[in-house]
Length: 532
Ligand code: NAD
Image 1 (tube, rainbow, N blue to C red):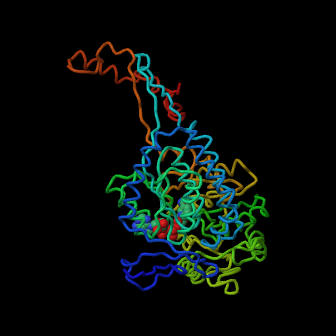
Image 2: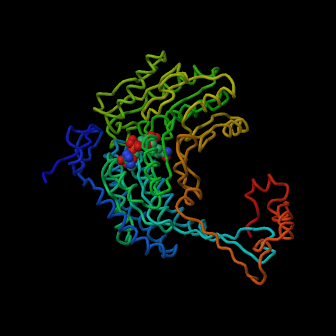
Image 3: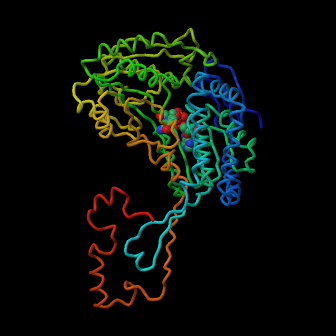
């Protein structure tokens, strides 16, 4: 067959028959240079990979935690020994500054890896569960956590290293095997993850990487792995949920965001302005938890907006390899066009472009200037849709309630931040905001904390990654129930009689399990009965 090249140069598909394409070219979005080519895995390749992964799983599931820990720790060592090379690859393939490749991808994922390498055994150890009166009758219950099998990981391009690698490390520590399908915009970073585990001595087929676009991702879902960990857009998340339902494959969906930042007048405004600039513009605004809407209390809005503009003027934009570069290239022409459209919507709907609002042609083809937009309102188109670019629209509020209502007026709910010196107010507001993570006097970075759950409310996702909650997504709990004095038949067994029915009435009273006794609500809050 003729070699037909399928390229995503600057995110633009060439006009060729897609079914005949067999290769993917990776480009540096900042320079337009080709940086490598990879195979476009077919559906058969993917099905084979999943079948081999099942075989690898059968061996890996029997490994001890120290053996798993050794692999993950060795993988860390490989990363540390190639730190600059990996950071350069991430920067070249995604367009992000070299500095961010280290600070926002490599450093946090290394920390996550050590945390789960050290703690997965404890987090997944068998637990006894209090079962009330049944324990007085000689029964006991324990919960054992078993791995699931093959975990399929389908990430986006924006954090092409940290997200799939972190999920893979957690899946491996839980005893699963892994097949990763990186984004078509960052296949080389995906392949690098496979290479790292190989160098660390991973058994054959334990960590595999298949490359290609959405069709390869769809083939991975159709190959019926035991779990899909997906990161990407709401539209693709819906397609995956639908396709996964065919095999009842469970999915974790990490989807989009339109994250609000609320700045009260009593906040440390200088610090909040620094945070807003980083939160909105790091990774050229292409973070799911980017600040995409800023609400500032009206009395502080003028001062605060000037602080933002002052800071933006100092930011250097350019090819990410420069160590003084704060804002790199956008990942693709497609993404940049969305940003242009959204800024145009703001203009047409009466907002003010205070700074930026155009491409930065001197930096290169795919650069967009960091942009502050004032007089934004929630009824504007681009205050509702995810932009995923270096724009920061600013709106105002008068009361605490109004701030909360504006923040919650969105289909998304990934993260949010509240800025105030009054911590009681900050925490109160945080609990009213519909988002998976709300930070008080902090912004964006909590994906970097491996110990805490990550995931969204509303259309920002389903399920969690990271933390105990994320680890629980990668195992299946088994309840082992033992009757150690199995002498007499249970009262609820057959044959049923009027006397038995009378006894059943007694069972129905809230005496059967101490867990169900008042105070009912506080028992619910603390998770029911005591674990012994
Ligand atoms: P996308 O949905 O276009 O693609 C994501 C991945 O899905 C890619 O690997 C793609 O090849 C694959 N894919 C596409 N169609 C598929 C299909 N039918 N079946 C299976 N796989 C398929 O998203 P994107 O443009 O790569 O990423 C940007 C989005 O990701 C943004 O919305 C952003 O908010 C979101 N995101 C969310 C988080 C989070 O943690 N919540 C983190 C990073 C990015």
